[in-house]
Length: 160
Image (tube, rainbow, N blue to C red):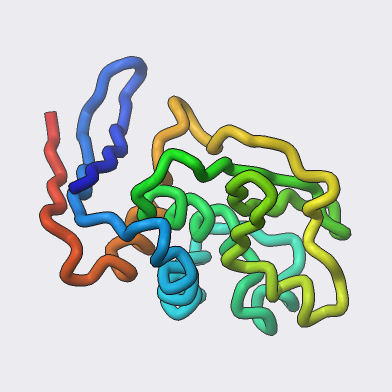
């Protein structure tokens, strides 16, 4: 069993906590989880994102999804070996993926190959998650819920 939390704050005070409790996938299931994440990427997950390349957003299923899909994969797998990485791509945008030693785990790499470009692995660096206190993004938790299905044990929103 695994649990992730996202606190919402007003100033320094926690005003609510969203908690997702679930049965994680084993590392041996990582390819399956990548496929499940890919199958659950939809435009509604991008509704609040301001993207510089709207044509890519409309024509490329994976464009704009690298951060939350990478973060979801990170939390869904039961291991401490995954390292978040990011690098600047050919557009000057940050792209995210995970690594386990030399193995690259990139849920959205196809967004590059389908336009004859390469993901920016050569410029990649170990990276910390965005946001205050590096909490999981709401969009990440929403994507995780889609992927988990009956592996979800409990979701709680507690307000203070």
